[in-house]
Length: 158
Image 1 (cartoon, rainbow, N blue to C red):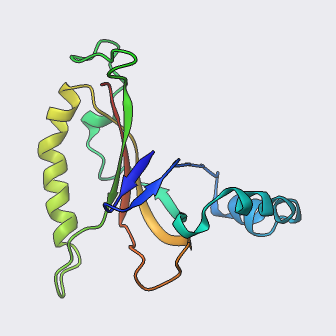
Image 2: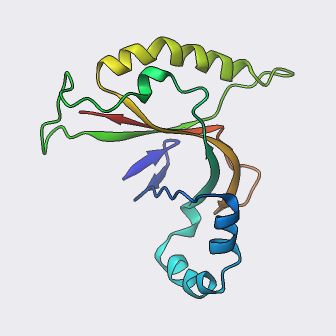
Image 3: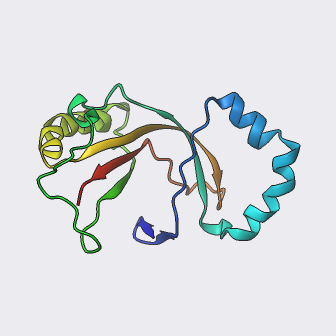
């Protein structure tokens, strides 16, 4: 279970990788077979709390030290069932100042460079950093929807 924005609670987060936007279009948006099975998805989800983001994998800003293989002996190994490893999900919306769209992104890049060695020494690794292209689906379809700039997944050993 995951909670975002102090109120939105989700039972699951699903990440699906498609080889390309064309494949997504052919499989999901244009497929007669998918149109036949989509009613089951709708029946299973609380659509008032669902969002789908279209993203692209972003490794250009990913610190190299966080791209290393997962440590076989991290400094704080997981202890099951009390302290298991987990995937940390960050939904990022960068600060934006009038006339300066890069300020928040630049500050976050500085934070990433400074924090990466500390995270890496503890065994934290990037599982994927994704640039948000658009909201593909939002349950509310209002102007109040939060458009995140990035979604980051980081593996934490315990």
